[in-house]
Structure formats: C-alpha cells, structure tokens
Length: 137
Image (tube, rainbow, N blue to C red; front, top):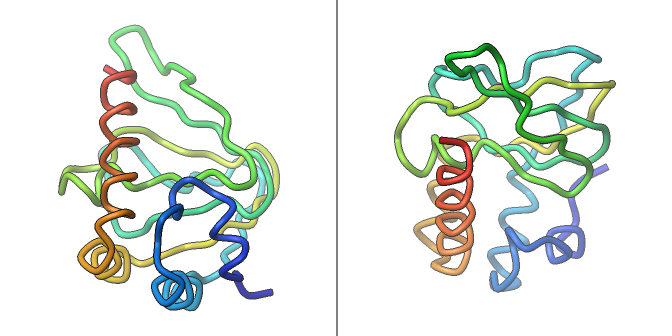
C-alpha cells in the first residue's frame, strides 16, 4: 500500500508542506520490512535514508562510557534518521526492531530535494534535530 498524502498530513514532520510537495514526497517513500531484532541504523554509519514508521516498535540506543543506553521506543507515525542527513555527520544513535516492522524509507537524494523545495519541512526537521542532539549528549 502506497503512502498517501493524507497519511503525511497527520504528522508534524510534514505539517505545513504544500499539497504538491506532499504528493511528490508520498511517491518517493518506499515500504521496507525488517524482522524482529534487525538493526535498521547503526551508530557511526553514514546516513543514506530517512525513515518513517508505518507499523511496529523500534528501540533507539546510544553508546556511552558506561555501555549502551536506551534512549526511546518509536512506534507508528514517528520518523528517524534525519539528524545525520541534516548535519552531514554519521549516525548519532542505533535503531533496532523490537518486533517485525514496516517502514517508509526515503533516500538521501529525495530527502535533500524536499528540504530545498520546502522551508517548512526543513524548519521542522532542524527543530527536531536540535532537540534530539541536545537531549542525547
């Protein structure tokens, strides 16, 4: 099932985007499935995709001086992977499937195109990334 513009409008990541950008963006996402315990993103890796959770639960972790710290659990409607895409850095945390998950995946090039075309999208992501960077240090 393809991602609908009405689905995107429900989430703050995409609030404020024009209908034409939402339509274009909805066509760029691809559904990918991962089994339980699959590592979707590994801390320190190069960024190549932005993800949006269609269904399932994922755990976000970060390495610390004392071991691995659990930062959060994500569920349907949440997005991840934008920080490294925004900053040009490597992944700042790891994301692992706690159960079988279905994700919408957006390639880096499409992510960058929509950022250039839509200041509202860029502003929301920078706000979120700033909050995440502040809270994960």
